[in-house]
Image 1 (cartoon, helix red, strand yellow):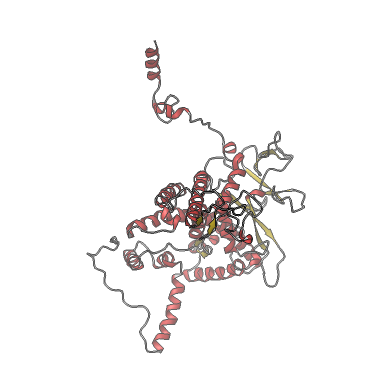
Image 2 (spheres, one colour):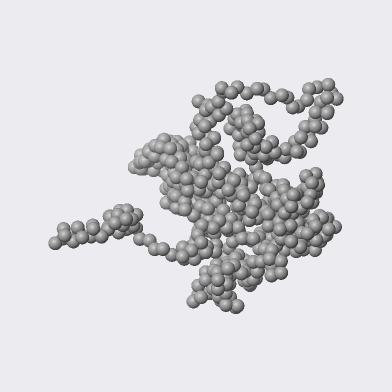
Length: 519
């Protein structure tokens, strides 16, 4: 009967029930899961995820490397504006468009390079890019509020941007549903999820921002919330920017970048600390002299100076010192377990775990550890793979953070008459044509500059790239600025009777492989 029943069950089981959806296999019986909505999966765990992510950033070398490496390569010293207006649609010649773009870039830097662009006057716009982006990686999301301040003689613009950390955007106390601190209900009947207010159709309406942190007990402030509408009612322009890497549909809050590897990174940190301590202890070569006569009460009391002891008043706490000679008590004997450090398997084991972590974070372990010991081709492949992610995040940051702020600044500049743009406020299509721009950041590193330059020459010669693009990719410079500077330098060299800077490039050998691997 049992065999017949088993055969009947086998006939019923099919498809994914034989694999990932199986409840019969022993390997799957202990795997208990449930399909929940983004609020239950994400919002209810955000406080814990944020605090642990910050701890790994502050106290975990690998976690800090992952976040800082991403920030440095995506943002670097800041993404720089390159205005690219649609001259054809606006009826401008190429020369007129170039002149307008140059004027706007200079005018924008008047505001962007000043700390008066910051509502709290701590950082300029380019520094704020890195702060907002790093906060998004560390906490899951970050917020930026547009504010207006009084215009001053030294700052003709009133636009200010105020960065808000993710903790302060939360559901107001007293508005929770049955004491829920995540889900709440606004006075107008809208729902609030982790500080994000939505209407009956699920559309974003407003954000609720606290004036202090939930754990900031020393500020003396009474905790209050301010409701900030997401978009202006008359203009449709954003009042607040929400930087968040959305993973799921109808997701309201972001997840820290380290969330999938928090446990692994913590274990790596613990293992590293244990190995380091074991190595330190084994390095403390200490000589013990055994005697049959009476000695001091604490045989190890004089191993360290009183000022160097961690717990001098603990009678049962023995502390070791480097290169110490100590006399044991009567009939006492020392037995020390040999830790056999340094551990020869430590490096390959940690390296393997870093590969594991790097795969989840889209960062090759060579970049995570800043350790390039492979061949030229392997190292270059690792950099190229990492830069797929860096470029994607850069374009996303430019679209979600830099461009909206630039458009808000440009609207004020045109309204003040400092920049001329006919039709800007009348036609959305014309407005978009005036607002088009690119945002350039740090270039990828070059493992072999000679090969990289040869490859760039061939790309330009074949028409698959431009000199302007190659200048940006090589070192982040501006091609037209380079030409102007070279012209000045060449004129100076000619006056001095020396050769010019630009030499005729050597003819490339068609039979030579440009990217031949270094052994």
